[in-house]
Image 1 (cartoon, helix red, strand yellow):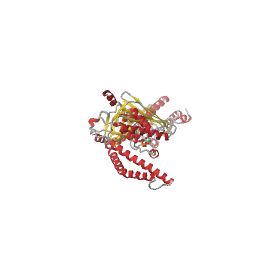
Image 2: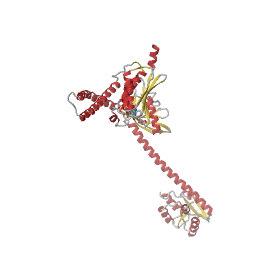
Image 3: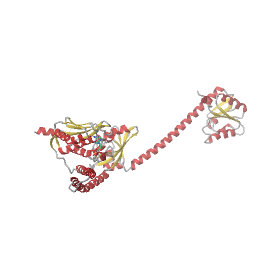
Image 4: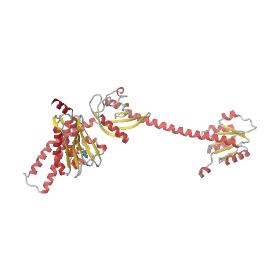
Length: 504
Ligand code: ADP
């Protein structure tokens, strides 16, 4: 026991008794037991004292002149400040104690004179303990009430936001992805009715274009706790694909872990963006082509000889113009591929030939960057557009070279699976952060905003690659370890090549 505990009084007791001897006995008995005692001889003084500084317990004599104990007790119980203080009545053995009255006016117990020390102490202790527990309960109760109020108001806020949000919102179970609740904006966007959605999964409703990407997103969510504005394609009942940004939070509803999916439909914004970009690109193409023509004529020297400085400036102008033309061509290429205006010209071709051709085409660039390019071709027949596959491979190789250092190696290799071929472009370069591995396949998405300027790219290469591979019913994805290198993987089905072999 520390000194403070030893010296702190056990409780504050107010004794009201008109007999000074009684007061002296009680006061001594209690003070010795480390109670703090205040004694008064008149009911009215006791009442004033109790109101001014409420004690933990009151010992109250019944028989007193002017105001008796019952009256004092009644007044104590009538006042908010003193109502809860336990009152123990004191009665002399010879007095007729009206026990019923004592309890009915609010007393909790009584003791009789002459006092039996142990009995008095035991009773005081009991009532002080009861009072303490009562107080604790009241406090806990108040705290619970407060928490309930706060919860109710939080729930109301959430419910209102959920109901009236212009963003489609859906709550689904985390374990099996069944929809528990969706708001009216979600119903509007999806085209389904509440009854059609609740209890079903996105897969059952065929809402996701790429279910594996959603599964990956949920994986990321579990790792990080939330997911913000990831782009997805969403298929409503009408079948007309919509592009959405999805944010997911984990929530617990009645003990069940759920995902709160908040959607931002950006289909229209994307359409306008694409329309604008392709319009501008078309308008830019003609003047840029004539510009490069003019610059070419200047560089031949037909119009006069340039100084060395003039030549340098001209070379910069040519490099920049060429980059702009590449950008415009890539934009138009991607746009036409997306809208289905370009179709793949598929023929039977050999994977080994394509790998070798791609490596040969990129060899000069690799050599200039002092990077070793290793090609491990694999011979198998594919049903593919060779020009487009070559475009994809050279793009991946060019990226690998751009993001590697001199002295490093790049591998272009292939493996055969029962139903598909897997082609890999592996580098030892700077690597790609995990959260960008998917995003870099979106148009204009770069790990570093300055990449295209510094490395001369357009930020469209990987989107075009993805489009080409998807049109071959294949898949493309990146794996990477920061600082150690990246591997770009392509898989293409062998289905057609097999059929061809059988037919031959
Ligand atoms: P860009 O024209 O900028 O190369 P891409 O669509 O081909 O456009 O690539 C997008 C971005 O992905 C690049 O700007 C770069 O940030 C990142 N990237 C692509 N390939 C690699 C790689 N092999 N290593 C590191 N980062 C890469």
